[in-house]
Length: 122
Image (cartoon, rainbow, N blue to C red; front, side, top):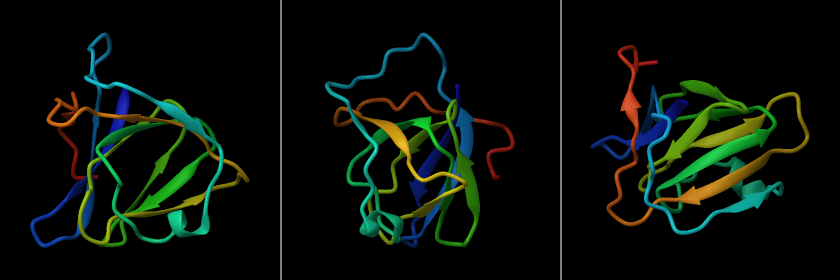
């Protein structure tokens, strides 16, 4: 499945790379929850609270990383949030009033299964 991974750079900034999560692979997780609520602070730059998959069920979200680059997350594209330090990322809803999503945290030290695409530099 198509995926975009948020990562920390050595200088503390955040960037992203495109790739995919192979199908029929099992990730080490223990829980998940859904949300359709957003708080204002979430739209400001922030690091991810934990390593996690964010699976969009409804809505389109434009994410922005430290250098100003953006990417779009929509249903069918998995976000892998691994930018745990620094300023992190920000986002905004695009042509929608709600964002329905699943949060699926990865177990500590678990393989994220992410495979970078050849053109992962955006």
